[in-house]
Image (cartoon, rainbow, N blue to C red; front, side):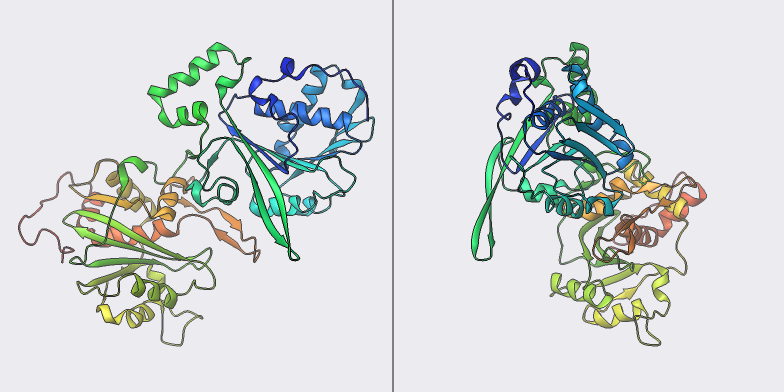
Length: 477
């Protein structure tokens, strides 16, 4: 412990954070808009603890190790320098550490080196800066924060609450935010351990740029300007509430969640159009559509992970969802499903299994001999999403969360095809393609069910003759 003349907190941090100086809750979560000074506050709080606690070892975590030096490490370093305390610390870059003369220290760890997360002895604190960690990284680190030498054991998060996909499916939101109406709150969680009820506390604190008295007026004006020019950026920069991250370089670049999604419901009098993708990791996929004239509505999605990621299991789920359906069924999907597979008996393939399992619906097969060009079908579907094509309209059901996520985050490769980047399954260690499964299934359906429109688009026709009357669409049964 070092006796230092520490400034009054109100002089060096914004008023909104003064209430957190004495926070001893196990989890301290600071979230909100950019520019709110939440990271600046945490850096000062941790430097103070490093100086004044008898034992302190803090992990600086980000998903990528090489981003730490220019983020939390630099923030702490500049805090020390600005307070005139640099003579009390040593700054190392290999390995990345900040060491106090009392022996307390900050050490850096990245989620891209899982082994390093398990090799930390007696840490007392972790600062997850900006990135919401992977759930497995969180579990690994959290279980190491247990030293009996410490005055305080705490995990601190400073996050901008943007995530890919529906944030209500995110593990972090489910664990700490689900069911909460307030933006800032304190709660206690209880877990039964060896027959005893063990409690731990969570403090959640929301802040925005308006809480930062040192933020220049020009920056504040720029943030406010997004209110009318870019509602998404305004929500992120000004409000700092949970939202779906927008990204660039997308394959379905003309898909708009506001325009191309909406409420859809099953209509018993219409045929079901079911399209398959046969990848089994992270799940096996079927998307369910119905067609009214030249409007196609995706009414449901089935994405079954292991151990139910089998063709038979997907078919049983279809039967469960539509038990009394009698208006016809059409089957679409990946042409590769026609090949014999080691998963099946000889002479069987995914489509023979589907026709057998769904025979009560008298399904008709609509599978092309080969998959349409990825670039061409992507351009066609993008056009339909943006402006329609000769009256064709696609609506993705608001409840089809994985499909919407696919359209929002699947990237375009340099050759114009789908960039199906791989991630590693945390349970099995197997690589898998995170995105592309539901959209692939839908591509097969759209290009086959609306073959005339797709052919016209490929030829570059400006107009397609549309007949009216009872035969408006061959799909409208």
